[in-house]
Image 1 (cartoon, helix red, strand yellow):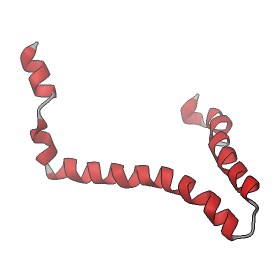
Image 2 (image 1 turned 180 degrees about the vertical axis):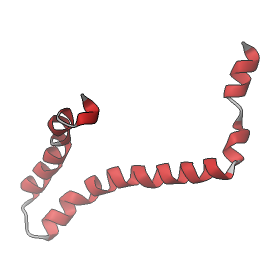
Image 3 (image 1 turned 90 degrees about the vertical axis):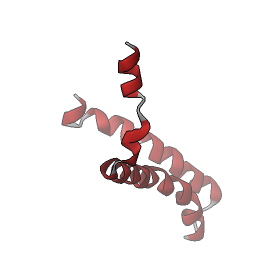
Length: 76
């Protein structure tokens, strides 16, 4: 049991080039999820939308994927 746990916690895999590429791709991919949420409201305000409506855009962005994901074939 101890050798299995030691093998699972082996950090040598982090030095593998493929693992480094995979990790970097995951970081960039996660930035793609959160960066648009950070800049949506300021961009809307710069385009002339009032602050309350710009904040409403964030809640719309957060709620729209939930019902649409239920109709996706992979989610059923």
